[in-house]
Image (cartoon, rainbow, N blue to C red; front, side, top):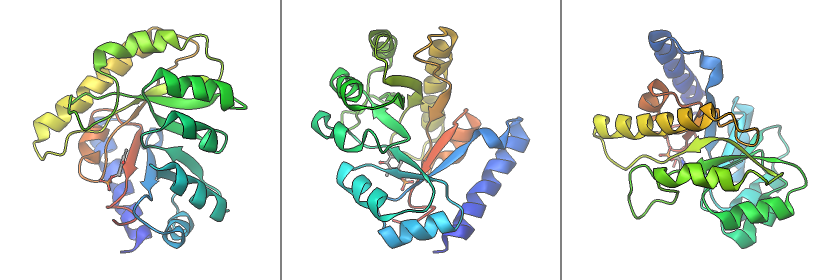
Length: 223
Ligand SMILES: *Cc1c(COP(=O)(O)O)cnc(C)c1O
């Protein structure tokens, strides 16, 4: 599977959707999720034009970041354990999975500069998914007001594993509505501008519903 061809395909999808609904394609970032693939394959992806790399385990994040010297932005997208925050916090460009006070405390104590974070929200309510319940998001953001190293740049969700387009669209819409509410509060520590949503099977719907960061693994770099 040719990463460059996959990338062009996804970029064309973004262009088409944006033309149809009147969005600016430049406001959408493609994050290549490299959790299933090797260091070599990840390097190949960057050489093919990928500029954002996403990993979901701290060990693999560190391993890849140390081995890869090509220029890229590094995203942590997986469940974080508090004691491992320090291992990645000064090497990451964005954390997509902030969902607990203990993680925020570790970021606050260990980061040498402010870190751009998404709050992960469990819209679908599935037990298997991490993230805050939508009703908890506002209070959590308030609690982080005094944290100088935690900057809330947006909200993230994982949609349920279903093909039902209405369910997927409803999930993304709910996250977008929640984001709109948080953004309107104009909190200096929480600009809350971005929406990290959409994966290989649902990114087109996510873009239609306002995604600014799509996280693509299998359909971009392979599984
Ligand atoms: C694995 C993963 C993805 C990408 O999944 P694909 O379906 O392969 O595109 C996106 N986001 C998170 C949080 C993931 O763990």
